[in-house]
Structures are given as structure tokens and as C-alpha cells.
Amino acid sequence: EIVLTQSPATLSVSPGERATLSCRASQSVSSNLAWYQQEPGQAPRLLIYGASTRATGIPARFSGSGSGTEFTLTISSLQSEDFAVYYCQQYTNRPPWTFGQGTKVEMK
Amino acid sequence: QVQLQESGPGLVKPSETLSLTCTVSGGSVSNGTYYWSWIRQPPGKGLEWIAYFYHSGSTSYNPSLKSRVTISVDTSKNQFSLKLSSVTAADTAVYYCARSPLGIKWGAAVVLGLDYWGQGTLVTVSS
Image 1: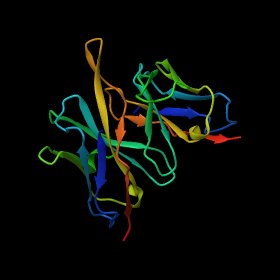
Image 2 (image 1 turned 30 degrees about the vertical axis):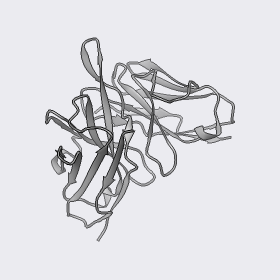
Image 3 (image 1 turned 60 degrees about the horizontal axis):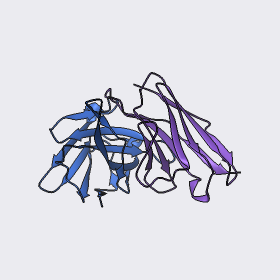
Image 4 (image 1 turned 180 degrees about the vertical axis):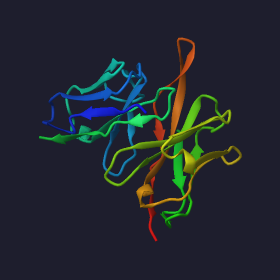
């Protein structure tokens, strides 16, 4: 099973600042990685797939990068609606698909 | 607009079988360009992928749950279902159904994330 480790567990950021979230895979997943945003009581929302492609309707302030085992989600200028929990997920053709444990982005 | 809606009992007794259905609207579970998945999230915890199926009949299960899980489809109702047997309190979670589109990259099919999710349904295992 491929283990995804997200860091930090909690990120305290002020509105307008940049947030950088990390996801490390225990073995290469190539670019088969997605990022999701989850607000309390809501289903996750797809932000990024293929490590760097924004999903439909996702603002340009969200960007993803990386390949292999190291990935980054960057939110260039945090808006009030961006304070949430973020998960990475790998979906290689070697199930099981797995998720990271999440990074909570909170207001500083 | 694609919508997914989970349904099923909110309370299941220990050792019994949890049964959930996902009804899809705005799209077809027979469409060969999607995988259809079940994912769960225990209260206050992270996400765990359970299984997916593909229209051809192929399925894939999380090895940690494989001995207890069955995923099936009813194309006439545009639904797919999850059965989880011998449940314990550790199976208490919000259960989501979700869709994964498939794309083509360098001549091979590739998954493009989980783009549509149901709202989730809380299943509590308790006597």
C-alpha cells in the first residue's frame, strides 16, 4: 500500500497570504495524484488532478506541482473560503487508492 | 449536472451487514469513461477508499476490507451499491459515493481524480 504523508498537520495563515501544503508518497505515484478541499460537514471537492491540472471551476490561486514522491499544493492568496482541510490522494493502477491524513488550514 | 445520492440505514447492529445505494442522476453508471467508488470517513478522521467498479464488470477493493465488501451495480435503476458484512463499531463513518472520470494519456487510460461526490451518509454501528 502506498502511504501518503501530508505536512504540516495544521497551517496557520492570514488572509491574503500564501499557503504551501506538502504531500509525500512512500513510493512513486508518477503524476497520479489529486488534491481535495473539505469544509466541515461537506463532501470533499476536487481541486487538482494529475498533480498539476486544476479541476473545472477551481480558481487560479490554487496550483499543484510535483511528480514521483513529492507534491505541493499552493494557494497563492488565501481567501476566507479557503480555510478548510486539504487531502492529497493517489490513484495509481496498483490499488488501494489512498489518501493523506489531511492538512488543516486555519486563520492566523 | 451530475448528482450522486447515497441512501440506506443510518444504524446497523454489530455483526450485521451494512447496505448502501448510490443513485446517479445526470449521467450513466454504464458509461465506460468512469469508475464509480465508495469512500468512507470515520467521525473526525481522514478518508478511506473502499472500492470501485467499472462498467465492464471489473472491480477493485481495498485489501483491508476486501473479505467483507461487495460492490454491485443496477444499470436499470442507474444505481450502484455497497455491502459491508460483519460490521463493528470501527465501521462507523460517513460513507460517500463518488465518480472518477477516465482520460487518455500517452495512449493509456488514466484516472482524473474523484470529481463528483455524494453528500455522504452517516452509518453508525451500535446495538
